[in-house]
Image 1 (tube, rainbow, N blue to C red):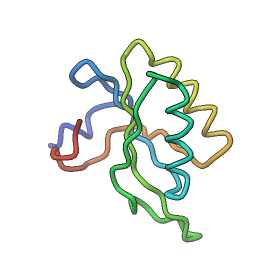
Image 2: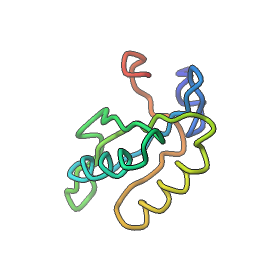
Image 3: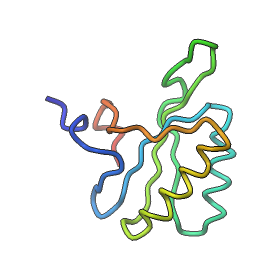
Image 4: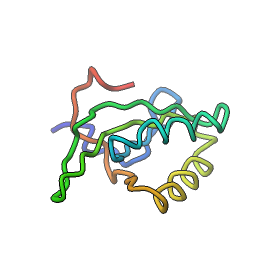
Length: 103
C-alpha cells in the first residue's frame, strides 16, 4: 500500500509541515505572491500543472505548501481565508504521487 495515502493533510516531514492543495492553474502566481508577503511563513511549489479538470473545463494544479510546524495555525487560517475568495482546496490526504516529487 502507498504510505502517502495514509497521511492526513497537513503532515510533518523532516521537521516541516506539508500542505497539499489544489488551485486553479492560472491562480498559482497570485497565491505564491500572497504567501511571499508573509515573510518566512511558508513556501509554495507547484507540482502538477494539469492535476484535474472540472466539468466546466477549469484546469486545477496540484501544489505543496511547506512551512514549519509552529506556523500551522497561521497557515491554516490563511489557506481557509484564501479559499473563500478563490477556488483553493486543501486536499484531505496526501496525493498518490511518486516519491521523487516529495520534499
